[in-house]
Length: 219
Image (cartoon, rainbow, N blue to C red):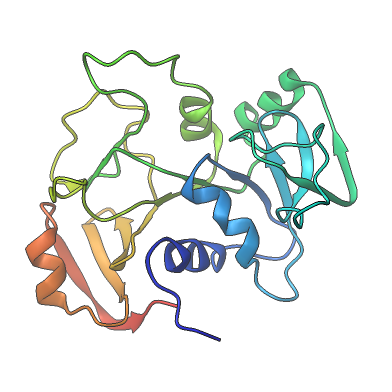
């Protein structure tokens, strides 16, 4: 198998958090790619906010069902035993604390675990969506993101400057360059992507972080 890089590496690493039987929600964009990297032998219940319980991998070309889509409006599938439910029931799962893990994208995330992923002041957006509900009701919140903005500025900050989606809610941050765990002591660098060093990460990260006793390699 070819070595994974970029967004594929982020999605693959995030999928390794999933355990057999987990109830998982994936945000739009990069997080939705995780469904294509599920660990072998791990059976999950993927919940889509639109009302699917048991969402499966992206269908093959020509096998799409226009009535089955993911949170991003792209073709999806439903696994054997899966079901559909009203939108209100879907949010009941989220707000009621029944979702084990969510993977979300972000505009900014900081060393305290604060998340800002819904708006940039001055730009018109339709609203926050379900992200604030996920931040309030889900046990483990993983951020899947590019390490830097297109401008080159770090997206992992000492303190978020954009309006927050959730306060001190993030548990893990995965980028194409490394994996941080958010702890009471701050960010802990746990893994590096192939080709990156600790010095590289310090150079492109505004946030402060400490090193794990043993730093692994992202896969």
